[in-house]
Image 1 (tube, rainbow, N blue to C red):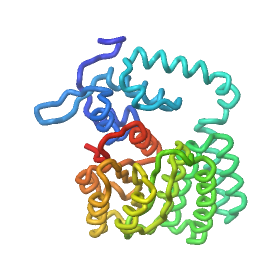
Image 2 (tube, one colour):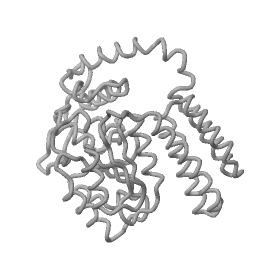
Image 3 (cartoon, rainbow, N blue to C red):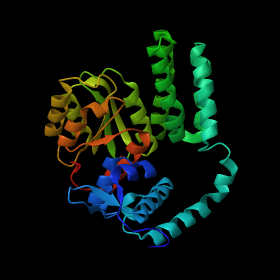
Image 4 (cartoon, rainbow, N blue to C red):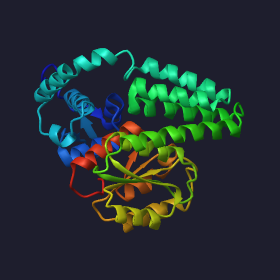
Length: 323
């Protein structure tokens, strides 16, 4: 036992991912590059973690949320992490007390989501834009992206598939969301931040995931070069070379079984320098998991995972191939 935490290595990585909210790829990257925890391996090669490992990962997540880098946190003990978090909490209290009712408030985000969906149903783009603007002020860009816009667009897509909304509803909402995300990207990205190229690969025509990724990265201080949809590997690689980007984020929404896409991903990896990280996400990205792992890319299911991965890339000067 350590500080009341069981150090027996008994939890597989899927349990750790579920309890911490970190993707398996981010967990492995943190282990390999920073040694934040040291899992044991079974004879079959399965990683096993302790309760103390899980608590340590949660502490690192909380310290990261206060703006600290993984490279700064990895060498600290769990006790030191706890003290650092207490310092950050104390420093944040004057601000947090004034905005706690709204900022980061899940209930507020759900309210904005409900209001936004009602505006879409009524084909009221002006009201939807006003709702998203209020949400940005009330809960901040990360919460807006993660808990308002992302579930809103998923819900709209599901309703459209069920014929509960028309293509016109979806197009109107997409246009408003695009303007909102473009505004976030323009206002928040840093001209001197690390570079990130964002696109969808050839054959991927749905752009909303890439727009979300671009805004999420910009809100984390990255200099985003947004290319749009349906880009061949050569064009993406050229943009990386010309801009000196440190990473590429690719959104894959539909379809999940394009027979040509694996070769596009392989081609992109071959054309990039080894230090450039490739990050793949989106609703259909899981369908290409094997090739993503083959090329050493990171597979990430959501914007919080993207932010964690970008923080990892920003703090690292190592090889961009994951694993």
